[in-house]
Image 1 (cartoon, rainbow, N blue to C red):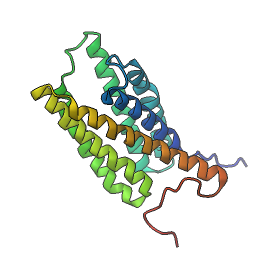
Image 2: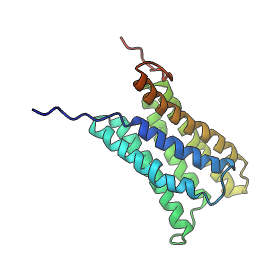
Image 3: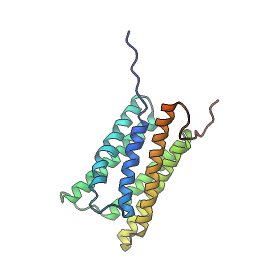
Length: 197
């Protein structure tokens, strides 16, 4: 009789994919990467996009509805954003406007708020990731609306800094899961919300 196959925890893959891509995009928003940011778009398709979808499918296979839905959704967010920006820049569809981005980011902020509330059953580290992501989406919505109405980009620059923090928190959480498991002790604390009995 063969042993039942087990799946590894896909969370580090999804969190690293999300975190690294979020940092790249927000380095652009902060003004450290150029306007033609092909790196963020490329990583949006693959590491932020495809890798998160794969992590989400594995989580769903393992019975983790929260993780599976989150990773698949955010992976498809990155693929959708990268596709919209690519098609727009190639002139195949009308240019994506800042007001389009503002409404899109607002809706994703509402979506993320739901997951932030759900994260109180996980760890404080993951709650920080999702809480800072909700703030990031709302700031992106407001800053893109401000750009549309006034042309002022100062708030987008500030938002980029917050986005770098959000992405770094996801990478910290992924590193904690990997290193804590490898060393079988707490190397990077993730702080569960509820004490284990």
